[in-house]
Image 1 (cartoon, helix red, strand yellow):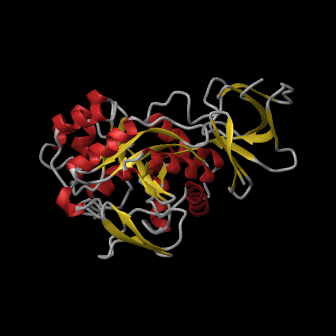
Image 2 (cartoon, helix red, strand yellow):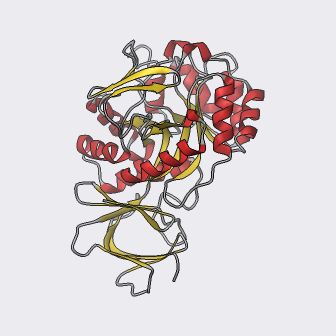
Length: 385
């Protein structure tokens, strides 16, 4: 009976079927049974009969730099563990540790650190690495330090992949820069998601990149050539191409609510991945914080560098989900797609992003206002409100 869990009388929500009331029995981190009125003996019981609770697959954040005072670029095991522990409070059960444009040495140090990381029982699972930069457009640098931007190098990236112990899952880069197009093809060989971002590409260049293998776009609208009716740019190309899933930071700071609604209308829930792009200031008070050696001022208006450029966010996945629901009136099934299933599919995680027998027992339990009540990772309750 060790490591067993029985969840009863909750509404189970997946991306592709009608929500249904049921029970779930979990053993050793896996979903063993889903049915009505299960009576299996378990080490831990959760009964939702007096609450209108919804059970969703745990949120997956594919783009997060930091949280709770820590950052992936700190390159310490302590920082990663503290991030993992803090993220469960917002319903996140898995994340990609995201690096940023820095010196080669700093990036390598962060990659090597993640390569040595082992998940703890009390935190979200670190699912891999998202390398954001340094192969980006200087014109669309944003908060990425321009002095460290370099051209894509297949040889260098293969070395970085080795340093990380093959844990790099996604790379954000600008395909239009010198060496960008051959770089896409090398990513396919390494089974790494090619994501266009911090890019000044034309629509034609994006189309070519998609043919070569680009399948994702990093924080839609932000630091990419904008839409113009005579030059649709990166934004137009990404919105129109069904092969490309796009990240969205739904904090209403990085994008106007109606711009988010527009993306939802065009891409649909199947084409959107909710992310936070959060920095170490997430969960902390307003004030000044470090981001890659730069001072970021965090206020009610978001996180900005001294020059006014947006520098990541302090958004939680819990709030991203609420904001998406509020502006689009999407269904809970669509929330599941945007917060978990699409990310799991992109990352080729065959047993995540869905509540089904044989899948990992990674859940978030929500009330009717989408507040996180409990987070369950690998079949263990790791957060309770």
